[in-house]
Length: 196
Length: 196
DNA sequence: CAGGGAAGAAACGTTACGTTCCCTAGAGGC
DNA sequence: GCCTCTAGGGAACGTAACGTTTCTTCCCTG
Image (cartoon, rainbow over all chains, first blue to last red; front, top):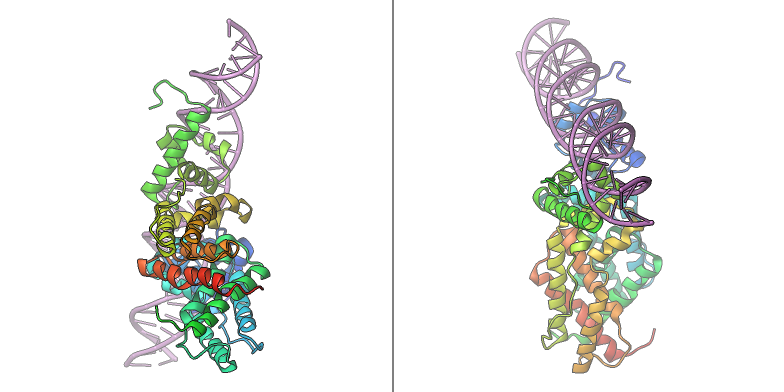
């Protein structure tokens, strides 16, 4: 494998990241080791340790590199439908990264590095929720109260909670989050428009 | 320490549980080992391995033994106040068990054993929420719609999410969960009384 | 009081950790 | 195109915990 070429910088880094993801896929997060990654990547342990003092940091970087961007889902015709489509996308991404892996990262990384972890958990979901709510307002589903995005965020929080902590999220539960919590709150706001 | 007596059954078990909790407190969940627990408890590794094949199972049992029961908080005069008091209690219990520990348990135990883990995370919080809602109804804060306890549950879910996944829960955030999500939903229900 | 089951001690091989030493390929400056 | 110097990669090391085996000894049970 190390026949002739010796990789550097970018190329080496990407090869390591790919190897990390493959190892996690093969043996799970807990079963992933520096030695396994080194062997699979065709490199050596010191090369890995020079870059990452902890396994969690290494795995985090590898997954961040491959993280797919969240995109605004197609218009389904209703706020309820749009929210469900979005949350289902978020759910499948979390499940793709793996519950054990995400929990492992959360457990091992100090909260100070939590910023980056939340990238994996779609803290930026708000960027997608904005357009969805705009769409709903254009349809007339919301009044013209200021964008209460703070109410759509918790819907994503609840999805995270179910997937990571409870361990499963059924379609029924997801629908309930949207139809019994998010949509009522969003529309009630526009109706009552009573300031605290 | 092992001067003369050799413990059996219950007494030994409780001593081990106490040692586990002390080890976790001293070295954190990740830093807790079978050897450390054995030494502190004045017993030996085989004794531990005979009982628990995994560290997670051992720690879980130790914490379950010491878990304080959730009690219905004193009447604060309002649904909002009661909910806040209850959620703050739940929060402090989770923080007492420790974020790292809880995340570690969630990550290592199969979801099949999740039932027991949720004991630690107050799945039974519903037992407390019921009385709180009854109280609110007697005050006239709710209509007489059927108990929508399914709306108070998510408030607890959001607290769990903030403490475990986000890593911190400020008083402001907790207040917002109650006053902007739980209470509006609970009271709106009784006002609209619209089926479906 | 006899028998058996479990406690506890000691040691074992294995695996991964995290580090060190060294050699050499190749990138970049001149 | 040579020279330097950085960084890749191999190998080995001590340490620590794992998970298990063996054996002795105590205490509960019948």
